[in-house]
Image (cartoon, rainbow, N blue to C red; front, side, top):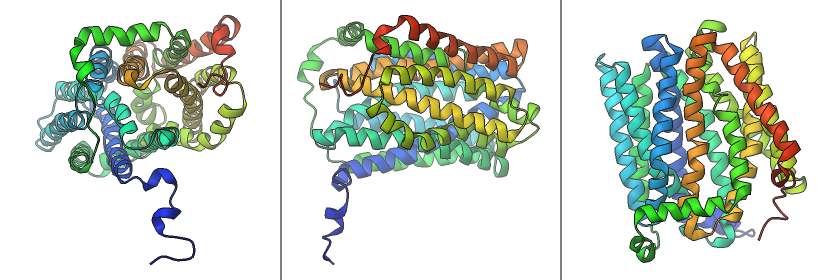
Length: 416
């Protein structure tokens, strides 16, 4: 019943008055909780089966190979086919992979290579999924609301990374890994149903389809080469991930070093996302008021310091604090990188550019897990992550001295 303040729909923020976006946002948020929980459980499951940090790192290697090889192709298809149908197809593929892991786990027949294959399949599907999800959002809201839409979607991802691993730790402790895999499969079913209900304007793909796929991929790479700022920001991202892959040491840190268990592992895996969420309120005003370049350089160096603190933490509480710091500094740098990409990329190139940046933003952490995994096998988890934490500190310092383009970057002044 209307009241003096107007109907519920008119009192909602303008962005949340769009049914299609609300459906999509809710479905993606729940699905991401399943994805992030399953990723954390995959790592712990491999460690539980093998006791080897190096073999846990193979999970990252498998993810990295899939992201690096397939991401450009995924971006090209995101710009040339019906994005809603493509998303539905990727959800079906991931659903089958998670369901297979659940069945094998419940039957007691699972071995480590089953997990590697499922990770490969899920990551391959996500290389098509991620750029398509990003490119679909402009079809769900008016152009004027796009900044608000991305500002809402990005923290939702962090919330999923916070809730997913914590949920995975609880399900591991009380029901085993199969429970997380079944939950993940159920979220895929829900997202497929949500996508079926979306009313999305048809995408004009005539020009894109007329361009060969390989040429389309080259066009995306050529565009990035003409944007050196994005390349330098991506290199900063890689400095934090290729040798500072903290995820892979968490099972050993929780079980062997700190003497905790599955629930503590889930908390450690969720701590960086909690830090990102807590830091967002302080980060956004800083990005708008302060020079973005010095902020991203400081955040990159502080990220490395937080990784060293995690590696050397003598207690679970201090390890959790270090994890919060990792998440807050990563959120600071990620906000600036994503703003730069959005401001400098036209709509027609969004799928391809997003997929190429994804090679670093998703492939870097995956390959970093592999690097830290074999380093930890040689020198121990704490020493491996300590060495990895030094790298972004040194690289950010060098960029501050020599990287004038990044150092002078301001988000507002560089807006069109």
